[in-house]
Amino acid sequence: MFCSSIFTKQMRKILSYFIMVVILVCSAFVLVMNYHIIFNLYCKVASNNILAMIITISIYFTLLRKIMLFYENFFHELTHMIFSIFFLENVNHFFASKTHGEVVTESPNMNIITASAPYYTPLLTLLLIMLSPVNTSGYYKLLVLITYGIYLAVVAKQIVMNHHEFLSLRWYGIIYSIVMTFWGSLFIFSWSEGETQCFLNLFKI
Image 1 (cartoon, rainbow, N blue to C red):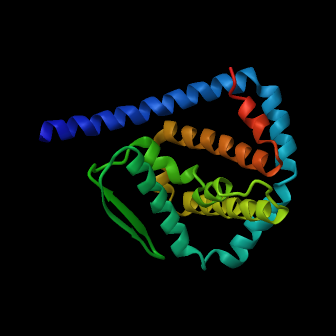
Image 2: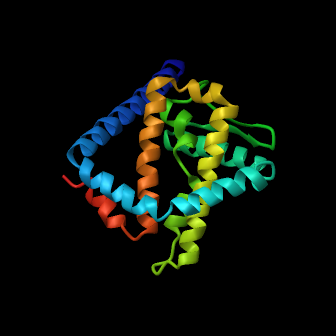
C-alpha cells in the first residue's frame, strides 16, 4: 500500500511536468507560426481594455489593498485546492485568514502546476465568463475586467510581498506562469471585445 502510494505521487508529479512541457512547446509553436496575428490581436483587444485595467489597479492599491486581505488569501488557497483536486489529491485541510492561508494534501509538496496556479488563474474572472449570458451587456464585461484588474494587482503584490513562494517555482515554473498569464490575458481581453473566435482560431492546426 505504501509503495503504491509513493508511486501514485510520483506519477502525479511526472504528469504535471509532462503537461507543463506540452503546453510550453505548443505555445512556442503557436507563437512562432502566428506571431503577426497574435501581436495584432493582442494590440487590438488590449488597447480597448488598458484604461479599465489601469483605473482598477490604481483603485486597488489606493483603496482596497487592506480591505481585501482575506479574499486574496482565500482565492489563492482555493486555486491551490482546485488544482490539487484536479490531480486527484486528497485535501486534508483548507484554511484562509487575513494574514495567511494553507492547503494540506496527502502529498508533502505540490506539483509544479498546482504550486504555480494562483499566479496565472483568475478564478473569479473565469467563473464570470463561464456564467456570462448570451447577450453580454457592457456593464457585465466591465465587471469581468474589474475582477481581472484586481487579480493582476493582487498577484503583483503577492510576488513582491511573498517572493519566496514565487521564486520556489524555479525558472521553469516562472516561465510557465508567464506564458499562461499571457494566454489568459489574451483570452479575457478577446472575450471582452467579442473576439473569442479569433482567439480560438489561433490554436487550429
